[in-house]
Length: 233
Image (tube, rainbow, N blue to C red; front, side):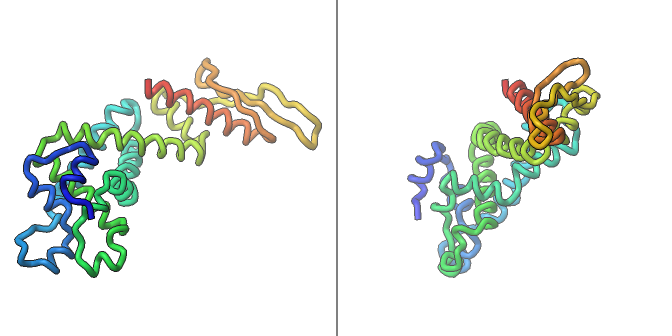
């Protein structure tokens, strides 16, 4: 198990109140097996950290996507703060290595259990907030959110680019994308179609495929990539 000094060196943050950090990393099972150590488990800090992560993710998405409807913001926030995502962030921050677990929990795979890791990450965020304030928490969390968000957006595009482009166009421009066949080439048994996507009068991208549906999806995917690049700029 990693000690507190090594853990703090790894994440580049040092707590003023080390007892807060220790509490954030103390699973209830450890307390059950070591009742005389006078420690407190991380459940109250988990409660606080959960609320802080909801707030920071909501605020960040609100400013990151100024034209997005409430439903889309809610879906994106859910992706950022779901158990699997926070468990992954806990591992990246080495929280799993510093977590204090009871022997039984350790032997049953508790150090890899997503619910434990998610809870510990939330508790750590709660402790960091109490120790150093909301701005430090923002600076710590937002780069991690950005990395996760990029994966979520890519998955959305891969899943159904036409639906995503339609949602964007309606939210930002109040218009629907229009797909027009630019050309078709090749013999009947191996035709290839090229389709362009327009929003209003502007031509955003082209896509090619063995049928019109595939070509339209490719055109929508290319348009979304351009729009995503503009959003990041």
